[in-house]
Length: 81
Image (cartoon, rainbow, N blue to C red; front, side, top):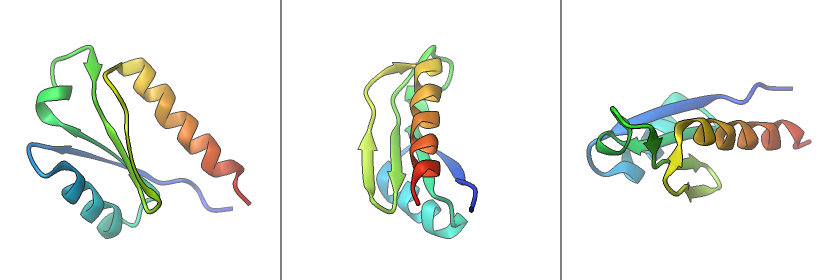
């Protein structure tokens, strides 16, 4: 079984395009992408989870809840045959 690889993209513009490019270039399963102004120095974050299946925009979440959401996606991928 292959591990689930997760990358991160902190961007200032063209979030989805840059995240999709990193997904391919880095050969990872999931990119957690967010805008710098939404993430840095805040207790909450807005992120988009980018995978080969598509993009999942998460609403504003406390950072611990975002971490839980990321882990939930990893666990779901590990459960796939």
